[in-house]
Image (cartoon, rainbow, N blue to C red; front, side, top):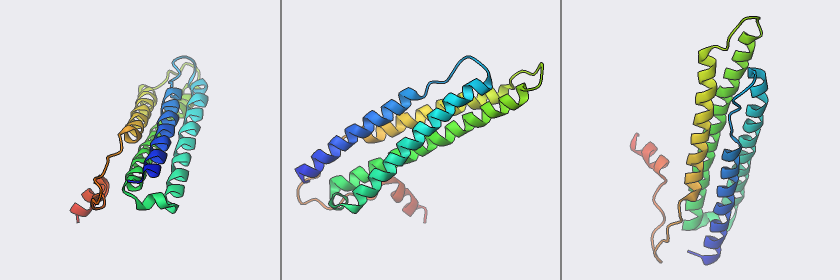
Length: 169
């Protein structure tokens, strides 16, 4: 493994760890107020997750186009970024569920004497909790240390997802 590539990847993984952790820290579910008041913070959180995944896509593209992609450490890095991207995308999906729950609760509570439906509250709570779990899984993907391949070793095996897909054929 090229020491320069390993140092670069290690530094980039540190950046992604910080960015994912900052995004996860930003996902605080508003506890008080009306469904409409809770909608804006969740939309801001959705934008933060979108920005995170956009950055991951950009880094994947740049890393794929360079010489790093042809190295073992580069392939492992790309796999880690792809896993973090998948987890980040799931977080966005879960936050969208929370947005739907808040919008539904706002629609129902707009009528006088209406209470927030339990289903909407559950959608918000579960969607938000699932988004946070997905971001923690994304953090775990970029926090795993790089393996030191032995000199003269053969290329890394297929990533786990590709191997599972191949075995189903």
